[in-house]
Length: 223
Image (cartoon, rainbow, N blue to C red; front, side, top):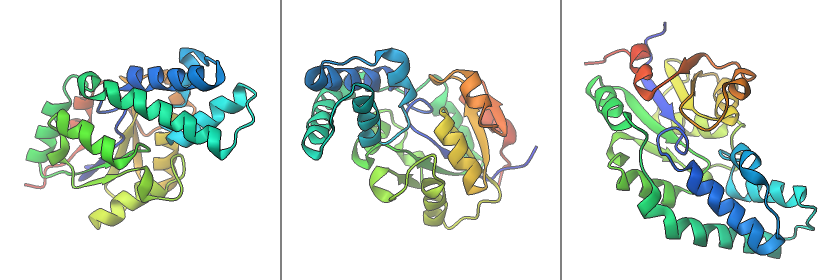
């Protein structure tokens, strides 16, 4: 067991229980403009990808001829639906606040690496009382390449002035595990999220976490 001093977290499906809201917004946008429903399983499979990429992938499955105009309409429909529901629907997973408080008490350096737009990610964290735990929040606008590329993870560490050594990246999706591994950090698969263990197992995470509090067993105190 390595005594990690830095923990990076994904957001949706890892800290915030927003997956049902995301899936509903994806299905709404596709139904409105393409009269297409990917079903829950395929909609969940896209969680963790940037929004434009999610919607483009679904549009291709629907056989749509996707151009910039249609993509803008899909994105607008998604965002309108999502933001209308967001503030009442967003909530942290059980135990997240307590675990973050304990990590902070140990002096752990904490950051967020998400494919979500930074503004709405920040809003969700604040509504759940979690924003102040994190030094940095790397969102979709902050990098040109997104998970599973390692760029977002490396950008988070760059902003914190930290090396990859001594860092573990915790996320619920295969994209998170792949991005962390490519960045050279250890990875923790969050089993409380929406992805089945078999999908995460294929990416070879360093650790399996049944609950967010499990991260504490791998973090050293710096105080």
